[in-house]
Image (tube, rainbow, N blue to C red; front, side, top):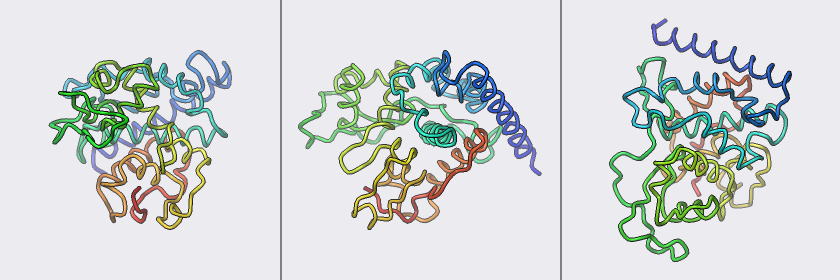
Length: 279
C-alpha cells in the first residue's frame, strides 16, 4: 500500500474515533448543548481533523474558516443538521461539508494526507473569467464596478444569488459582495443560505437530504432522483451533470464518502448526477 494511502486510512480511523467520542459526549451533556445540534455532531476537534490543511501557509484562506464561525452560522439556520433522525442529520452535514470542500479544495491526487483532506483552502475564485453579472436580471441589478464571482465556502456566484443572500442575511450583497470573502461569519452564512433556500424550480439542498423533496413531473422526466447527486445538480448541474464519469462530480463524491465514513453513516442512494438532466 502506498504511504499516502496508509496515512489517509490512519487519519480516517482517528476521525472516526473522534466522531464516536463526540456522539458519546453529546449523549452525556445533551445534544443541544453550547454548540447546538450541529456542534454535538461536529466538535472542534473533529472539524480540525476533517480540514487538516485549511490553515496551511499555502492555502489562501489560512485562518479564515474558523470552527466558531461555522457554528455561529449554523445557529442562524436551526433546521440544518437538526432535521430527522440521527442518520439523516449526520448525512446532511456530511453532504454540506463535502460540497463546500470541493468548492474550496486545494488538494490533488497525490496530496499529503490524500486529496480529501484539503477542503476550505480557498475563499475566493482564482482568476474569474467574468464579473458574473446577469444584466437581464432587473430584480437584482449589478452595481457598477462590482464582481459577483465565487466567494466563500459554497463559492456563491452571480448577482441573482448575492442580492437575495444579502437581503436574507442583513448585508448589501450587490454593493458589497466582497464581504463574503472578508468576513468568515458571512461566508458560512451565505453557504448555508444557499443550502437551505429553494429557488424557482430547484428544491433546496436541505430538502433533498432530509427527505422533503417532492419531484415534479419535469423532475421525474429528467431523472432528478433524491440523493447527493441531486445536491450536486442544484449546486453546479449545468456544468457537471448528465456527463459520464465527470472528474468534478467524482471529487465531490470522494469528499462525501470520506465524511460519511467519519460520521458513521452510509452514503445513501443516487450519489452522482451522470444521468440527471441539469436544471
